[in-house]
Image (tube, rainbow, N blue to C red; front, side, top):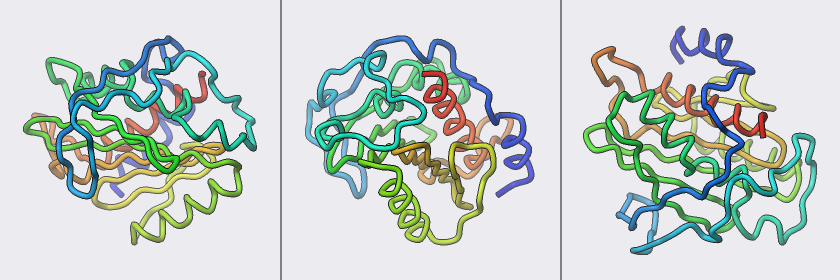
Length: 211
């Protein structure tokens, strides 16, 4: 992790960079493309057509019914919604908001963004039935990703990897921002993908907290 990421942890903790996080509107989902390690179906649309403005989990939620994790939650849908797409466009200084390809399976909602010359960004939210299960998933993911660094100011717990992944846990949800398929540095300002992943994770957390 860079010194800049540590500074971002202080500057962005508790802040919300996105505007209108609580607004409704389902994400726009494009026909699928093949992504290594993922299986997509051509013409895939949002799994349940839900809008992100309905049924937002309370900040203190500790358990949910099994039926409630059989489809993406309002919090999970945010990673593929217009606000996140707009924020990615702003941070990367690209002309149009990117289009996300969505998938939901085994309580994991994934949104894949193909960013032309900038590679691929993958956002995902794992929904657990309770806080303890979320903690176990978070721990197992950290072990699977290898060497990690703990990050302050992001949810209940958070860590990052040296190659561009940030993971955070809040209540029953575990968010993963995977920028490892993007260049290590990009843009005229030579932005680091580690910093970019941290900023996107912070923005989404801000929406979850605000919602």
